[in-house]
Image 1 (spheres, helix red, strand yellow):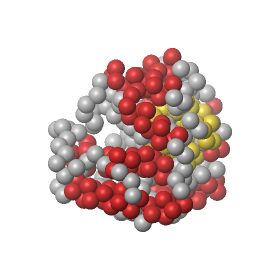
Image 2 (image 1 turned 90 degrees about the vertical axis):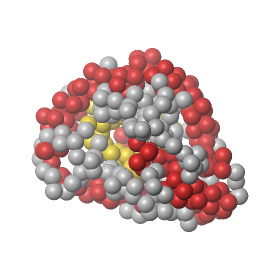
Image 3 (image 1 turned 60 degrees about the horizontal axis):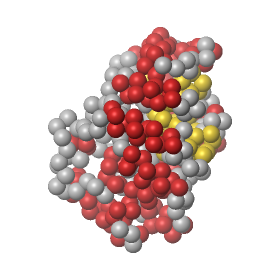
Image 4 (image 1 turned 90 degrees about the horizontal axis):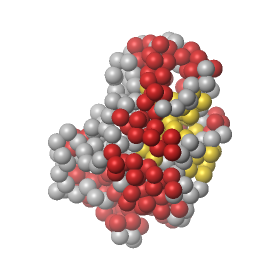
Length: 321
């Protein structure tokens, strides 16, 4: 396992982190708490030292499971997230900042996360959505500064709206944010255009989420795949999308001259090409997922020829909205 600096925070985080949306949550079906705990345990054995969670994942259940692991491995760093008080995803520029993240809401939810996790401090506390209209507006910054003063959080980040990497540029330029979490993968390369250069200039850490495009880049979503009722992916891959994905991933494999089974490894390694990326946090709910993802990270960076080929597979498709 290799480690990178999370921007100006100075935290040395593993290149492969652990995403826990599917841990203790309802949006992804399958898996058990014991599976999740075993997966996190194995990840730490293999050098993972950064776990990303959120208070809304399973209404706090994910945080409680992460807290169990943290008690056994105090060296592990935790990032969590505060939900918007108005439950509006994605954030709207027309919404007043205090309707989503008033100081009182930010503090109260952070203190609830601290109780769920069973810790005294959260390494990186993030807002789960963001609008750049909120820079200089509302009381959210006062809440963050109070939490830092009281030693309840170490650093502040935001999780950028799905498929809207430019919606955080003003905040990055303000110098008020320590890290940014964003969707970035072979298909969604948009963060490279403006966000990555802005973060590099301001020494803001980058946490990459959704490296497999919700599973599309694993090569396991076929035209015949059926997701359980209530599974988030049933809507994400609705209608003809499964067939479109199947065609797209086969083109990638053909252009790289690799078997489709190697695509997940390539997808993870692609995310680590930009130096500004600090860590990639694939969702992992089994020991098998952990071992394959960590092995991909250990394989090192792609060759210039591979990178050039993958650049051509940029595919703009916002299936979240």
